[in-house]
Length: 268
Image (cartoon, rainbow, N blue to C red; front, side):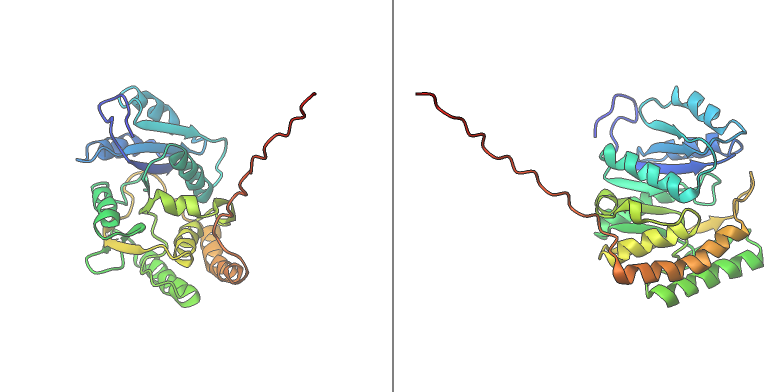
């Protein structure tokens, strides 16, 4: 892919969904663009009343053709924000499409390692994992840590998916994964979305690798975790597993249109 600005050459897009992230948004964008690899950035903002989108628009003057913004009306959910971003990445033909939070809980410098894991280890999905050797959580209260770690074991028990951090939101996908998945069949919009994306990729035979990261709880802004999100994750995993017994997440191939020769009559 060739673009016209200083970040002109990039095959990789980082999607960052936002809702009221004015304290973090400028710094996270600068952090990604300061990396040694020229990632492009797409912000999907759900109508933040705090002016998050306005800050992004101002920064687009500094990063033309490498910083993108999609504004949506209302708080429509994490999952639908990422799906919207995936469709953008597919349309623009990025080879690697990444997910990342805006609050610095995911270390931006690890984006390079996630992308490299897909290339060097010939994997289709690379997960920034808290629960593999070398990974850890910082500044999390004990109850939140127990909830997250317990959820990971619960998901493995129900799905038989051998991913240690299935709720992780720091992920790099090859484009072919997202092109193969029928994104309309991804049902969940909260944190269960992260589980379903990994599970759907796994059921279709894509190769997954986990890269250790240090996950740091947000310093600025307000957490989006809620009781409804937890409930969706608990009951959603069972529903997701049941769905997979009778349905495939694979996108159906569109029937090819066969052009028939036009018959013409000859006048004698």
